[in-house]
Length: 213
Image 1 (cartoon, one colour):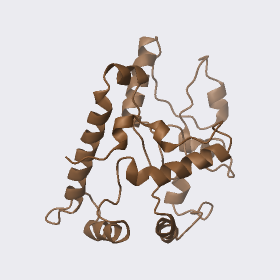
Image 2 (cartoon, one colour):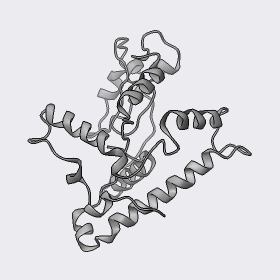
Image 3 (cartoon, rainbow, N blue to C red):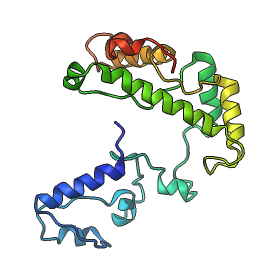
């Protein structure tokens, strides 16, 4: 699940304040200092600092629940943590050449009650995201003033197009069906679903068809 951390944390802070909670910024040098707190409920937000706080040199930071972060040890160049596949780009490109699958990052969900009351919302959202995608594609290929702080952005875009075509991050059902079917097969094989689902079962029927804006 993807969480927009900034919005989530602000809402969490509001909810805690409404419930009578309060926020204090403190520094803890030892676990004993934490154990000496009088508060009955403490939110543990030590995060990647837990390794130093608890003096456990074998503790390695992993992906958290709220966001995806590169481990601090890795960013610092520590030999204790390295990439599993140093040549990950070559491996990923080879996987795409063989399978034509680009792993999907996100999907959009609609509450069933909303969809049943307003069935047009599914296709309207889909069209809005596709329109936004088309504008982003165009922005990424503007050479007069690069849209991101990536020096060779244009070359990255051209490399992606050469390997994957102009629509290198496709939206919609048809171009992603094989990736969805592969995901569902893994999902069933690993015992997460009682039966093997078909990709068509997951989406509003009207969004299965392609369209032109």
